[in-house]
Length: 109
Length: 114
View 1 (cartoon, helix red, strand yellow):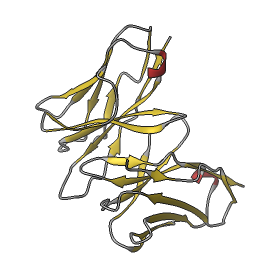
View 2 (cartoon, chains in turn red, blue):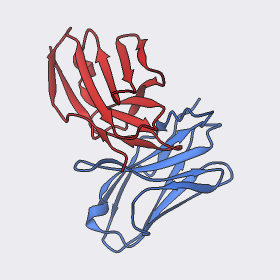
View 3 (cartoon, chains in turn brown, red):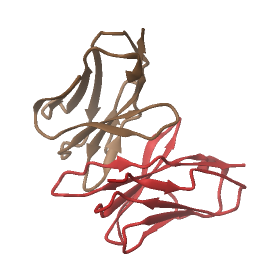
View 4 (cartoon, helix red, strand yellow):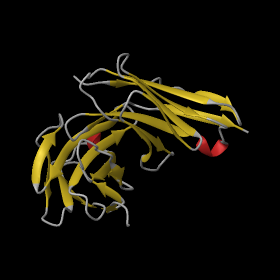
């Protein structure tokens, strides 16, 4: 069974700090990985995609992928209270995504 | 481009009834996936449709079914509703170019079964 594991949190960081969110996946065949942000009562919003080993930066967000370790992470620099949300990690299968249960991030002012 | 739309946004049904939910994907997207989200189980994959064909199916009972129309709009149906079917039902569309399956979610339908 394909699984994506995330620490449920909450991860609490002060405003301006770096938040580090981690995810591991079981299916070595997964090729694409995604981070979604979900605010309470809302639907998931795609914030980062990563397909190759290494880092990918987009604004304050950096996604990191290590396929050998089956590990994906998301760094949020200069965290803001508006970043407080649940972050879902997803790994691709054949035209499907397997989601982790998400990590709740709380950024305190 | 308009995003994914889902109707209705909220539904209250009684046990034993059936319900139909609708999803319109982003223009040009031909793949539509459905998910059930509950606090305990997270996001669980129901099924995926591409060009009117069910391409993948999750581990849900046969009470859950779906279809896709020629314009890529999709519907899912749940028959003989149970209390445990109360959840947020999310539809996501994807352009499926190559092996990239970036999925974009609609706002969801919140189903409450009483």
